[in-house]
Length: 497
Image (cartoon, rainbow, N blue to C red):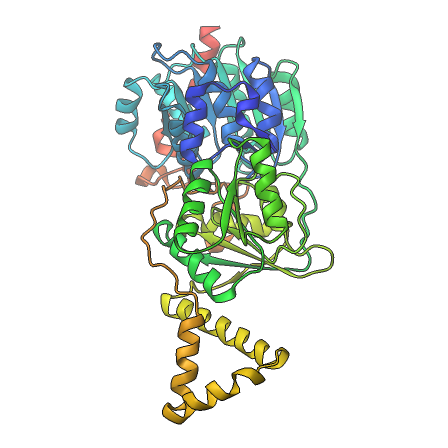
């Protein structure tokens, strides 16, 4: 994995990324950002969920002028859901630098969008139909466009937008940077790349065959504020011999480590800010079982090869499936079995399903353990230790004292007292962990009628009766909003030539 700081990303954007919980780049980000920062055209082939938004968003934000209002960047996306999510992520990335993004899509009031556009955002994220509507009305001006991005290009092809895409690209300045991202590369998309892009650099991130054997994979749906208590309860019940807890930021590594220590666990953390000497010291303690829990970021755990890890906890679900496989592969080694438990907030459930789809694995749902179950788990662990002593140790020298105790007290009271004395009482200390932005899936596959995925056909309403007109599967509505459609826009563009 590559850290964003290695990609010539400015401090202001690095701070934004850290606040969002991202320290290391996904493969598509690491491969795309250097070329895009240099102004090169890029064709990126990668699956959904690999972090493409930051791959094109970071270079846009780095290269755009903050003091200049007006649309400098255009992102075209197939559905309103994707447009909204991309704009939200770009706003988080660009907030500190003063770069604003606006989502423009069908189904939202045109007047509202026109008012928002008058505020002159630097980036517009638009669905094809609604973008052409605005071009017809001349409410979006594209003459200052520096960068054009086509996101999920194959999905736009499947939904019948390919001609619209060509018209949009022809309507913006030829002196521009074009970035195209697509999971597949059909000939129609390849034609755009060869005719409307300038010597593009091709980047292909092939999804690896991700198989995970000998690892039981489970997940718990847990709101962010309950994650830490859920973690400690699970640790109390299952008492892992060696466990790794993965989280997304250095700050959370420190907070989780401190929280585990104050509650009585032998835990230490590693992340990129620690010296190599300190990291090796912590890892040696973990290997030698002087600590039972290692808290780490992905970067710090890169190349980690420690046998005997019984549990891996994804305190924060990773942003791409490859990271998930890399993390849980720290357990279940050398023929041993292991367990991987992921804590997923309700908003992150679609991302979990994406990881299942890409890794071809199914995770079992686990109910978060309660405090009472955790207390019972600690007692059970003590009882097992007592049984091992009975089976393996010579206790003859204790018999007389035991007999005297049983003369004055019943056996249940004596055993209960022994369990209480030997059970490690967990310190009920309140622990606060700073929150990170949940990861959401950029879902471009909206369901059509009867649950079918959107295809390339168009649906036409009865315009004379006030119908909505041309409504494409996937949620992109056009029709009455366009008033004259592509033809009028094409005529105007030809006159301008």
